[in-house]
Image (tube, rainbow, N blue to C red; front, side, top):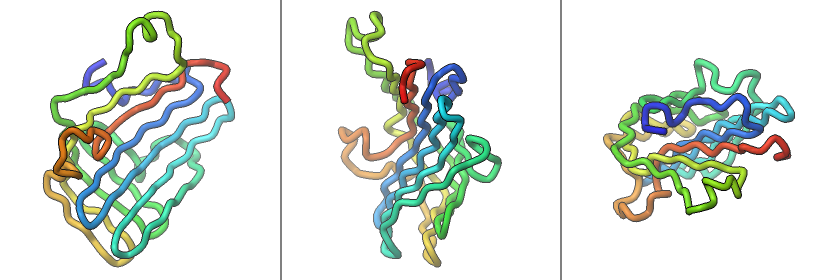
Length: 162
């Protein structure tokens, strides 16, 4: 798996969870697209913290990533409630795919995680009437906190996951 194919869907997986997170003072945004294939449901969930408000919003989707709410390795655009965004993404060069020997080889876990923790975002996030412009935003200035920003995918590999 590489950066270009990282967000490729796994249609046989019971669960898939695509996400990005950006934290650029004074706004932090986490957006998740969730496919629960065993119950045929797709969701978008947004967590935002800004001077306007702090809230978590979610909505059931007919299709997983419609044209007005999507994520690719180069771009994301979307809206829900009074939150909207349009961001260009530079995924960076780092890819994290934890694989502790022999867990992956023996398929001891039913989840796969892949992330590009040093992704940078350029564009805007709007919350209520406030618009926040981002320019190559990495989130936090502490590069060791890989979870502070980035793009990722979690895949449930087991057919029995509920």
